[in-house]
Image (cartoon, rainbow over all chains, first blue to last red):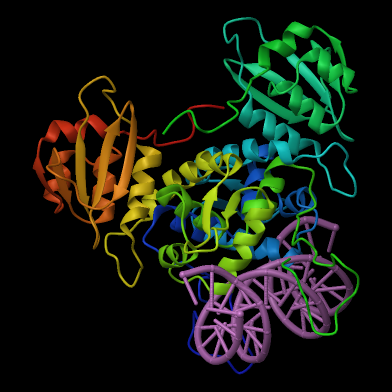
Length: 237
Length: 237
DNA sequence: CAGCATCCGCTTTGATACTG
DNA sequence: CAGTATCAAAGCGGATGCTG
């Protein structure tokens, strides 16, 4: 994968191979992994799900640990695969914007299932790990739902890392974005693990509080977006 | 990743690093990818979903292109991660058996979503690609459902590659296994792409036949397990 | 600076050969 | 059969350099 441009290797024009390392299997799963199975690819897609259109630097900031050439390479690959679009800004000021194409948006199901499966792997402490508030926002956005779509909207502020995050109900769906809220109905403060533990039904409010989660405001607002996850994928098939 | 056991490298006991190359991000998706994001991992899990318990050689046969050390490494990693269990057989005859643990079974949702997303990437012809009938069986098993769980069971034989495959309804769920059926209610013959196109609702029977799919027997049996997939993951969230 | 491209050293992967 | 050992070739991460 990735172009070669080795010394004395001028071959013919367009010798950049378009970068496809394939499993070579006539199988839907293998084909999907050919496209999004490379290191960093799905994390880039997480960034674009969580934050919408991003500039290069935004992406790099949300992907601590990535090498800059990796990011450039992957963006090229994903663009070529029709998953990401690059919006080259007009001359005067702006910077190129990257966003998901409709085909890229269809990866939400994939990211949702991986996020759900990975929840138990989140540890209590943010040892030497990196953390960004919008990662939590993405998980909430993907995994939670509004249990009372017809009631008046509520907003819940979550304080897990450095930057707070706001979850709001909006016409039956949920939206989540980084940043504080104005007069939120409830505020939850604690580790990402405890926060998601509460919201995904693995902990009830009492147990979460006993473990150190701080909750203020209207607890019913929390119940409204609490979404117990089916523990085993054994439900269907 | 992977143990070293280099020459003259005796360090202290337990110096095998347990093999974890981590993104180092306090994020559920990143944690999941730390565990199943390596090359070949999810394809090994596909094999175990499709065929149940497997011996080493079965796995290698179902994973054309994998290097034998890769398979050994990944099986060790997956075992250590609690996803695969190795059943070391008693001395006399048998061979070690690998199977998914309950935690590994929970990856069905992940594999299902990737398989679904990858469906459009399957081409018409099996160029120089490898193909195994049970890959198609896995896709059917994961993506299709029985639309009439209370009716008498039906069996449909699918002939896509070398080996035929049988899809049977069983108490509301579907089962799929390689091999021919005895007096199946219907028989479908054609490329994997056309077959899955029909069964996942992207093609109707007439169109599929026009494109070369051969259908014999009771068409209503096919309708019974035909499961149109939501085209965009835009439904929820 | 933002947005890459290049180089460099280390790790992972892949093909082959070998062993209990 | 079920792996290990070996080694070459990619892939990856970090640093740095170039260009608007």
